[in-house]
Length: 294
View (cartoon, rainbow, N blue to C red):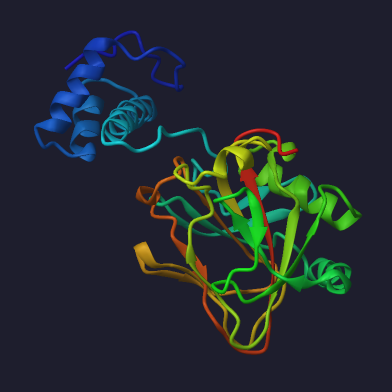
């Protein structure tokens, strides 16, 4: 395999991957060797482990993206990504430390704790409550909005930075997921009463729908979602990911983040809000776009 003699052993390097290395990685992967076995071969040949991991991830990801595009899928794009390379327990977001409770690699799902204090959750609910109305969904056939039978909640939107608590939360989110604040849509507050739910769906905009081109003019595709739980329902109301058989229980102050690198079901980001069985569920949802949302 290609030598690593020019690679420093104490740091990751920012350098182009040689054609020789790229071909070796792809040929070995196509021959059936697993990523861990390729990593073992590289480290035994003198590669720094971090550099080898980066090279493997980059080459294999690019190859899979090429295959996906050849199969008719949209090309992948950059997505928000929390800084969790070293598996930290806590993430500093400026004015507080957020707890990392769970990670899933594919699809990329991260559960955070302590994003909001109980008092901040209650303040958001109080500010939103007078403006609540039947929730609508984006109508991708026209680019407008519509009442959808699959979403039986009440909701409202805050404009970016509209009030102090929203401004603080948006700054935390930008630091937490390493994504520009201006790429976020307005914060949506939702209330689900007993029996209310949001059936499984995708958050990206379907490229095949005629209204999507109009929607994308406001900041491009959605590439990430953060669902923040503002209260504790008595029963029910979890966030489900059917493709990976995962359910996240709603707990006040916690937030579940997930990203989707292409607008396609292959991202496995199908998700929904299970029916509330008892009590009510309040959440705040932040959708993140490719570019500045206007």
